[in-house]
Length: 255
Image 1 (cartoon, rainbow, N blue to C red):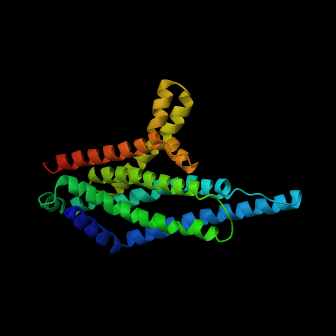
Image 2: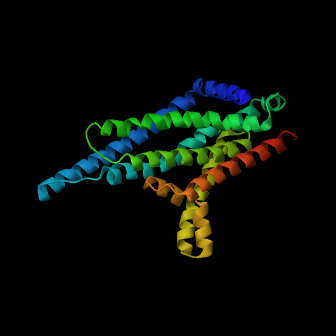
Image 3: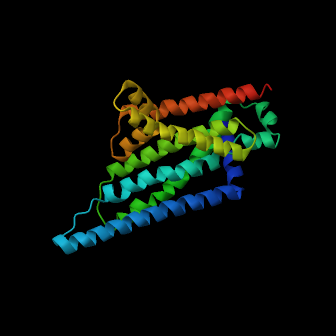
């Protein structure tokens, strides 16, 4: 674990000396904050209308603000996270430090784990900053915290899946832009599987294809439903992506 921690620290230092992480982080937080503001203003306008019509207003912030916010943030992650992962292996290959990394005393499992953990820690930091939204809103209104916590759990698991796919894409090429587009394409493919599954309906093929998409599993967590099947999906998909990354890196070091 000490070697993994060393590699994680090295990767985090390389992130923070680059302007990319600051730009991506600022854009991510700005978009999430703007979305939250829009949903809060819209909910406030609805409350005013109900007060004028009925004389009272009972607004469910969990449904009108947070559920919509969590549903919208996945679109942001689809674009932002491939940018965070595109440099992990691609930059090593471009700078010709990949061979040095492969011949270091760090094992291949530790290299893949360290690369993934570093970007996941960075993502959790950005996600933690968005926690200021419900904390601030709690000062002015009451709402149920449980679906918010499960929603953040869903975001963490979804982000881990997206990042693992991005790490795999970065291992496939030495061009960072290509890695970002490959990652985006794979994520979009998994996204569209949900639509294909809905078209096939309640058939065995439709159920299997729908299960392969992250949409349904993430939506369950956003609605406050913690199901073992959803947790198994994210865990198994994460392990599969990291295993494929391990195989790709292992095959390229012998070329």
